[in-house]
Image (cartoon, rainbow, N blue to C red; front, side, top):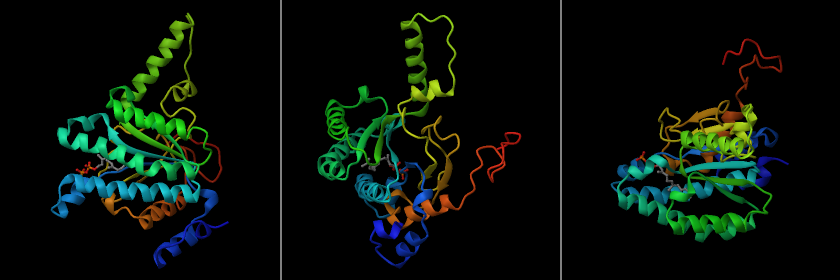
Amino acid sequence: MKAIDLIKPAGRREAALLEQIDLKRLPRHVAIIMDGNGRWAQKRHLPRIAGHRAGVKIAREAIETCALLRVPALTLYAFSLENWRRPHAEVSFLMRLLREYLKKELPSIHENNIRLLAIGRAAQLPEAVRKDMEDAMRLTSQNTGMKLVVALNYGGRAELVDAFNAILDRVRLNGLTAFHADEETISNHLYTAGLPDPDLLIRTSGEMRVSNFLLWQIAYAELYITDALWPDFSRERLLEALLNFQQRERRYGGLGHGREPGNGAP
Ligand code: FPP
């Protein structure tokens, strides 16, 4: 099976990219910082919310592409803990947009065997958003295809704080006096427990930052930063990112070529 058998290319460039993609070497988990909706709108003299609407369309396309290629997990950074600092009208628009997206797309997500998950501090989300997300997660909980993870009211440091407190609670509850945590203990208490760590982190709109996203999990992720603004991150650009990932040599601090790790240099 080849990538070109799974996706009908929209043009010659997409076809050429699909021809080159090796389905056996896709990332097990792609994480995306979708940045640049506001700038996209500004460039067109449109209100910021028009950028977010265009962003949803592209998110839909990215989800479809990853699901068709059978990428096991895709995480989208939809709303950070810091995003509450935006004007109230923009925050409520983003919340409305998310509910609208779920209402419209949930049937097709479910039909395509995609499992929806949310990461972040759900308790602080508006009740209606939380309920819609919970319903969507319940509906898709038995699906065995791609895991679509929406980071909502998410912060990487907050996730670590929540994990450490969950570990401390467990220690207290079990009355343990000697407890030794290792990396697995921490991974297992993160919101992402059970998911593979991202192999590829994509950020649009050119900023060289990780913005408090999946701080623990991206330890060995390949970073792909593109100047394209999120609403311009078409299928063609996503395929370019996947191909670029496949052309890299991953070393995990070792020497590569299957040799034993050396002195731990990055
Ligand atoms: C960044 O643009 C984007 C966000 C704040 C997240 C909103 C994301 C979407 C609407 C995509 C849809 C997601 C799902 C899960 C359907 P920005 O406003 O920070 O842009 P700027 O940096 O140019 O101002």
